[in-house]
Image (cartoon, rainbow, N blue to C red; front, side, top):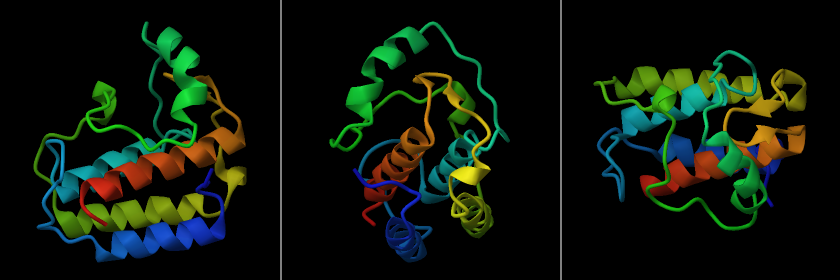
Length: 147
């Protein structure tokens, strides 16, 4: 399974982000490209401890599904999003892209930047789990916009 912490994977993701356009239509979902970048930036701050989300009652289900979700299959369209990560307001594409790339760069330093080893939905997380989850989430949203 690809992991965000693999430099080759990072380079591929970075190239895909570079080709993303502000007017790119979403192939599914409600967000536009700027909102998607803001959403991804927020979620990338979770393993570093910059964003903290409390576990809800659904975390019991998440712990049961963790192995399957972190498996080989891509995320399905329409998967639920924690309300803390929903971006519905208007965002400026270039501003959000710069914020995204800044957080992306932080994470390229590898597992040493991870300070949180518990996910609010999946429970305990290893560095490897975070690497897979980061890749799968970014891949999901880049595919959402055809890149």
